[in-house]
Length: 446
Image (cartoon, rainbow, N blue to C red; front, side, top):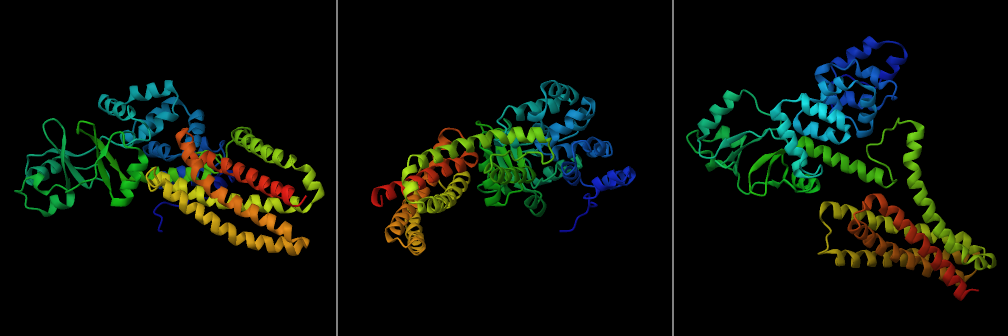
């Protein structure tokens, strides 16, 4: 990939060597997204210094590109007037993205600073949930009446002089502002100018309701290669449009969330946040893990006498628990991914369960034979090998079943499966694995 902006990796080094002019020169020709990345790579005490060197015309766009935690940290070090001057220059959808991170007093000042039309449009966007199509949309759609000719549309566009970014279609409405058609720019340019606009509208266009969730929007953009798409009200009135740049942000945030949630972390976490703050944020999740670990230890404690009589159980049972956890994690990952994309639903959940259970049985039998041979040769005890083999099959099957049901249950409880699923699954496979090994050994060997 060719980069049009200069590299910003050496900004920290330039600050340490006392060369602020070089930093200023680099920032003057840098893209806002690159500047935001550079700010996130700096220590918190260096960010305000670099911020003062960012060209004023780009400050708003830089703020829009920052992660939540970094934005809040930087905002706390800046004067409110500077923030307001930067934010008010942004598009409405970008302002709406920053609103949840603003203090109420600062938000009121921002609303007072923008013009009345922007304030009204921003209020409409903010009236919808943040993760809905209405919350994603911008109100800058290019609109014409549906009873005009292409010649009139072209004349109208020339009079405007410019079009909003990512404009690949013109939206047609009737007198009540109800969306009646979408006219691609390509058809506008290549069709006879005497034709009416409706004649060349898209067949079966993708249209979003204002309350459609952002995952539905992202999937449609990916499936149909969309650049933009209209958002309508329940009555069919055109409210605005969603563009590909906003959808890319949604997809990126979802990917970051899936990665960070497995460790119980926020996807907007600041890598260079103070130690005390980072420790506090992570302590809660470590506490949850401690509780689940204590549950597994309690199960082991119930069979303390069995372990004392046959020490090999202490050596082999972590293998069974680990294998069950890994098998369950594979199923859990497939489930969470399928549920987020809509591939898995209540309609086909039973088929998914059957398939994953059979996979658990087959893998359980395969690795049961392997661990039975190893245990038998290691401890010269055939019965011990059979016990470990049976426990392996039981735990891999249970891991598969738990991997299916845990995300479904968490979703019904309005808990993020990506955040809590891993801990719940580990608890199940550890407890079942320990209980299967120790219980079977106590029953058959002691």
